[in-house]
Amino acid sequence: MTAIFLGSFVGLAAVVLPPKAIFGIILVAALVLLWALPELPPVAESILRRVFFAFVVVFLCVPAYYAFTIPGTGLPWISVRRLLLFALIILFGYNYAVSSAVRAKIAKILRSD
Image (cartoon, rainbow, N blue to C red; front, side):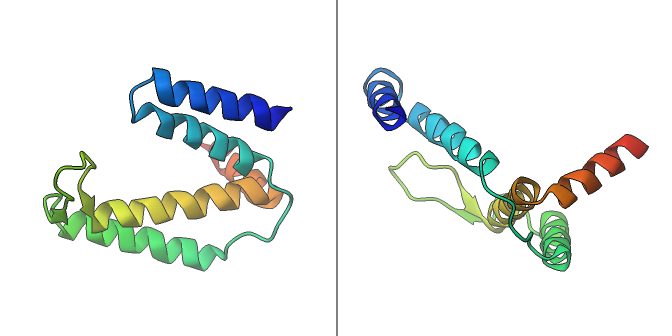
């Protein structure tokens, strides 16, 4: 029943809304699925730390206009900065979604501030 509802909703949105709005609906569905993940082992904290520091170095050293685009598609620039930011968001979101220990650690850090 849920699959029929979601399929109908996405189909209706694809027809009624602008073409880029469908990506927002798919993103919301992906976030719901991420929230519903079972308890799994998180990604190693050292990997997350390395990706973060790589992102900081690239963000400070590589200009934003060093990117490429696919002409005629209307897609945004693809750059190293955005790729590393995407990787950082995915790793952090996965860690936050699958581990209650990580959520507790983040909550403790935010409470202390």
